[in-house]
Length: 148
Image (cartoon, rainbow, N blue to C red; front, side, top):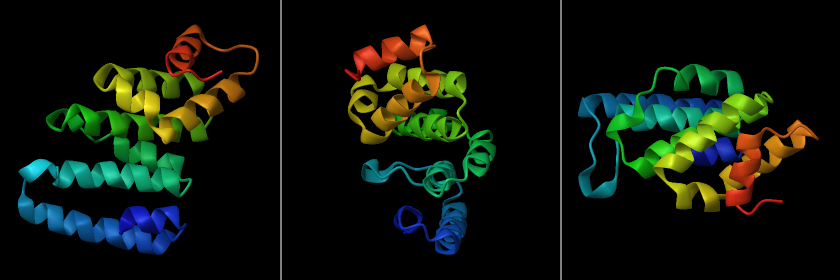
């Protein structure tokens, strides 16, 4: 519900749903991956990052992301988290930090990063922000993603 609320721009509802998810996840006590559902405190915080980015609150997203250790989750989930971190940096026009997050995500799950519309959108934004001074690492990533 938090994700849907964030995509609709419903800030208060998003925060209320994240708070409820945190409460529920705390009853689990730890991250779990029953039947590939990946639910627990870490995944809720990853959703808090994602929803903050969707709401345009890059500062909050980066603050929350700083305290997350996603290493116990699947590579795909870790990569998606890193794409959201990159999106937050892109909202702040931090080209280097955003590129670094995308490269880390690509190392974990290249097909997911290359095909995910949000990762592709972030790379296009970073290229535009860079103008004629596109960092070599970003240019390489854009080439691997077939983004002109």
